Length: 403
Image (spheres, rainbow, N blue to C red):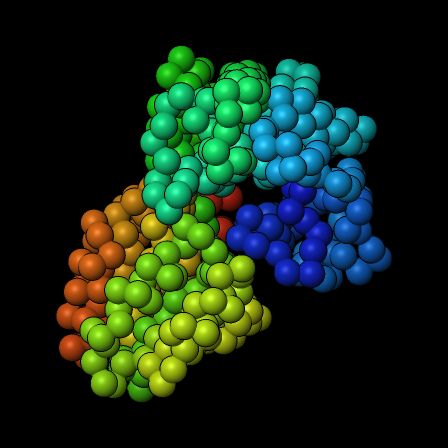
């Protein structure tokens, strides 16, 4: 097949989970003999953009996202015109070349983009987060999971004390956002990376037509992980690993506050990642038993994770389908996380009972961590294949393309 991937997260010097997902899928499809191009942001494009992100195919400059803020923060409300305007820009760019491809697969943050793509185009989009119904892509507000149903309440995510006008305008923006997204889902095929995301959208838009949607969980490059797996004698007892963006909702601060005084003497917490909360948390918690390594190359992340005793994914937000959890399971590591979002669905991919341990609260998660650190690390021989390897997902994706 001739496939065009589209994402505004690409290219870039340091790409996040969504961008890595696109590159992993695209490279795997190339290996299977398909023709794959990636279209991304023209304002980030340069001659070496493809090699910079690790893509072995052709990267196309498609659309610019200069000055994307539209002064929403200064004005204190979400603009009803902003996101549809950018969605149309993406749609226009892909439509210029769509006739050359069998399918166009969009991975991005503008779920209404399909509304501006004619029904005759074989257009598929993947939804990787709660951005289907939430304009900030994360149902998380004032350090708690957001459960509001009133679109006017969304104004509190753009202004600390919105007045009636700001509530009304933001409500109009969110209502239009969800309505156009529902139109896009009804018109074109949609992949949700967890059933949690599908159900979350239906809570926000109960009458949405999702008959053309499928749930296909995230995937990883298992062969690459297996190459970097640790031998049993290399695993360090007491090594607790956390990986991710150190930001609100990811739970690093909540975990570090809770774990103080609970770690046994032989234990050490290692945090890999960067983000806006790192300086504050590092100044407060770094010491003999807590170290911050900052951003690390992916191979180093795998190497460190494989040698750990246990991996902790402390997100207090509702993760859609955590790649970090999948990587921990694939490496045979015990993994601790909160029972939120799509994470409970991933227990289906355990090698052994209790590999993924879920807790309802952060105190209970820390209690379970202490229990695990009191035992020897679990090591298992890694099988030749893992059900969430990208090669296992591709047949389902190709089948969806061909529908």
